[in-house]
Length: 413
Image (cartoon, rainbow, N blue to C red; front, side, top):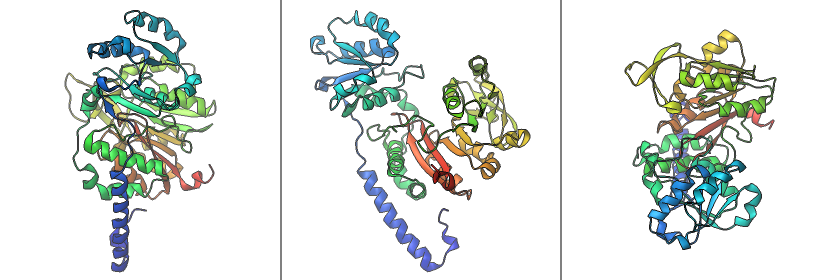
């Protein structure tokens, strides 16, 4: 349980104050000494490093460096990271426009030959391409798996429009150190504590340099992931990729109740899962109660606005996990939420289910600045003995997932 000074004697409160001071000092030291994961460099300071990109943005990459005034005869090798061998004809077509650039396509089987080399990761200035599978996160993750010892980001990404969505909160760490400390002591490993402090730094500075990328797939922490036969409640489906990944884990015995409020996604999802009887698609948004609201129309990033109706919003139905579970008697083993800032509200409407079934949790805590500590604290205050891990699955400081598992289940892992 979190500390509440009202429960203790003056002597005990003094002892806890001392503990808090020591803990805060430890956190400050770690915060001030976060190791750099990557840095920004200029095109004229490539130092012979490999430029790493993906096929979908290869031409934009080469065009950018050509406009930067580099001598193409001395251009660094461009490594195209893409596991799809069918991209070779498209790569050849692009390279025909840039005949003086040496380029190769690599896969994970070639990883050792790049060990201890440095690379520069580039994406166009308007952010990652729209294809979900071709993300900057995947490219940096690929670079790490290929053994690159120093991963830089091109300076164009320092002003990237994608980053502009994140407001800088000066002194975020110091202003919230008490709440962050409450989360810090509940995290099970140093990797998670490092991730927490790195995200606090990102909120304060918007610098990508200290943001680590977790070395396991999103929603699949080694101790906190779906298992065979699980009943999963999934909030936020979009293109259904995570749902497909969950299906591989739960097998034919499991069930997925997939909640997606955007009607525009439903036809594609119905087609995608038409042969999967264990996927139930629900065209509703998850909330703390039943009702109707309006969604901003922004694709997978659409958000709920309860009462604003205009040409930029669409109506959607809302329901809670507690309501749906109680009505359908489904049980619940795993909850995944990525619902664009509505996670805390949804969890309020899922507490009965959480208390009853104590499911594993994979909750996004990056959409709102205070989600980083408010959501873990809310779950910890529920009284259920959850153990927490924190994973960062995007170099942009997004896709930050809180993983929760009860102590009793963790001891069985």
